[in-house]
Image (cartoon, rainbow, N blue to C red):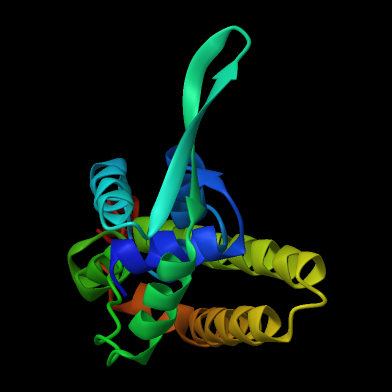
Length: 183
């Protein structure tokens, strides 16, 4: 999925500002689908508007700058549905944690253990967030299916970390204090 399609998906659910679309792509429901920056969202919205797939209006705010609110058009709904028929791109998974783990043998065991425990806590926090999503999307079966898929992936990652944490720690270099004690 590209940024254009994600913008249409968010607007398919209701009106939104560019900021709200960005927030949904970073922290919200769409954060698991595609990475989108302000630098990609606003040009996509401009193009969607030029193509007649969305409209916008400016809303004045008391004590704040005016905001631009976008709404999907019927043509935009059709374009979004058509985009869902396109072949899916390969999934992208990038993990700074896995790069760290790959080179654990170069690092002190205490650092490796600390990072593993921090990663485990991040996974658990993501699970709590997704569980909250289950509760807030209780009536939408498709949303629940997607959220449960994400929860299952996180549960597997959590189980792997818990079961194999000591293997990675064992690959790490002894801490400097351990080396001095051995001398």
